[in-house]
Length: 291
Image (cartoon, rainbow, N blue to C red):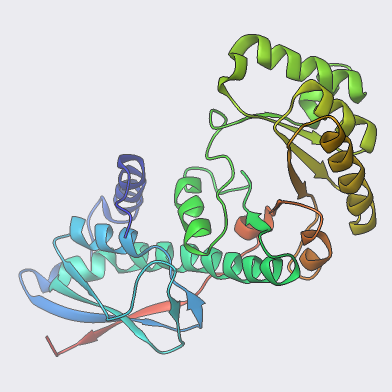
């Protein structure tokens, strides 16, 4: 398991405080009593959020023991016991809902990410799937972890991770190929060669301009599969003729159903739906007298 960052721990602690910071009017009746519970998957899924689960219960004074073969990114069958939790009954019950909510959300994202990654790999070996910044405010850092547990790339973690000229940046610079050239020029003037620059384009002339300007990554956005194929072929060919090596990304309206039609034309397929449209994977906690 990859240890949680301080930021992730802080967010999880905030979630706990929000739910039980004023006290638990019900579970206090178990004051001092030690108990044991098991966490069971109610869906077939790819597991993510195990580090968070361990942290949440640990903060309440309980100990989590994961079942054999359970690790981030592992496949879990419906009905499988993924962990046993021991500690004060009050702590188990106080942490239960927050822990299961995080586990469910992250495992749902990891499951969809695995499906998308498998589709892309089958259609075009080597093509990777990535998430986007369409994440839940404050929870995005954990959603990015879930993407990686599912085999997808996290893309930018924040605005400082990569310089990315998007449609509104380019519109503010006047639009069209000239805006692409000017935007890349301004970024290179400020940062030199020490950052990577991605440019979002919707047509071939803007893609050609991005190559000429020295962009490292070109994202084809909101194109049909046929349009993406044609644009990718022409932009890649132009880059090759001019001794440039670029990374080609495709994004915009891509779903699990049409992903395979795009995969052969890009190095990376980015999908906001991996986070905003992923269904949760359901889990439950059951008290047990064992342990």
